[in-house]
Image (cartoon, rainbow, N blue to C red; front, side, top):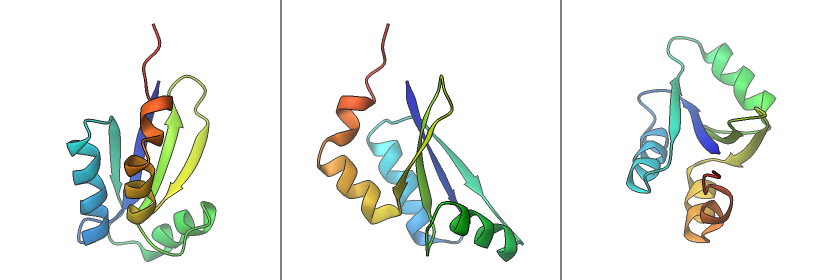
Length: 92
């Protein structure tokens, strides 16, 4: 099973759009808002090779392996292409 993680900050409209899209698609996710620390935002952007927020990750629940989806536009393309349907199906 996979879930998504959105890293950003509360006043970011693209972060909010990523959350809304995941809610709309009924995909499991965790939103991590970073407030009052641009250094921490910079740390995550650098760590995941991103220039902007949100940083959207897909995480394997069992192994913890992380895959960087990208930002909101990347997430939208990922979903529009149906890539989430193949790998997000729960196994029994």
